Each structure stands twice: as C-alpha cells, then as structure tokens.
Image 1: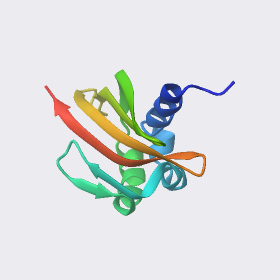
Image 2 (image 1 turned 90 degrees about the vertical axis):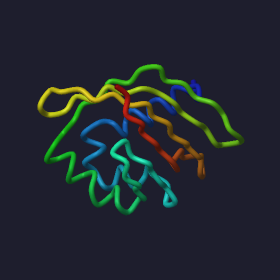
Image 3 (image 1 turned 120 degrees about the vertical axis):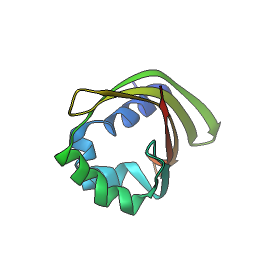
Image 4 (image 1 turned 180 degrees about the vertical axis):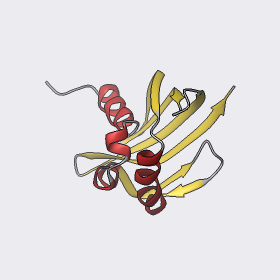
Length: 123
C-alpha cells in the first residue's frame, strides 16, 4: 500500500535531519532540487552548491540531533507541498536550539525534491 502524502514528506524531511544523510553529498544531491534555496536560521542564504560543499563537512565535525514536532503539510498545487514543523536541535555541547521550519517540496519524475527551506529561531 502506498504511503499517504504527509508520511512521505515527513519521512523525506526527517531524513534530511539525520547525520548519515547530512554528511552524504550524494544523498543530499538527490533530495535537493538544482534550484534549491534556503534562508537559514543563522540568517545566511544558501543554494544547493553551497549546501553540498558545507553541510557534509559541518556534520562530520559538529554533529547535531533534531527532535521534530507539530509536523503539517499543505498542498499548494499539483506536485507542490508546503511542510511546516518545529525542531529542537541538540548541539554537541548538549545545549538546545529551537526553530520553526518551512519547506517546499516538488515532485519531479516520481521523486520528491526540496526546492526551498527556511528556519526561524525560537526562544
């Protein structure tokens, strides 16, 4: 039986938070669209090329863990989905950083790819 759309997007979204995916250029390349953009919780703007260069290195030197909550999706059009959720990120020093997150996923040739992501820090 095929998974429902919310489960598919949740699984994709949470896979991008796993250290083994974040440290793999080939996995990131499959999950991020060529026209991907991110407005990071750090205030920086990233494109796919920059993510592929930096995220695997950053993950290997400073791995973090994420807890996801309040996950929701909204279909914006045919093969376009908005995902919203909260994360609690545990840093290597065991401190915590919260964020509100938004992603847009687009289905291309039966594969979903993220085209946009934004993280907004919370208190």
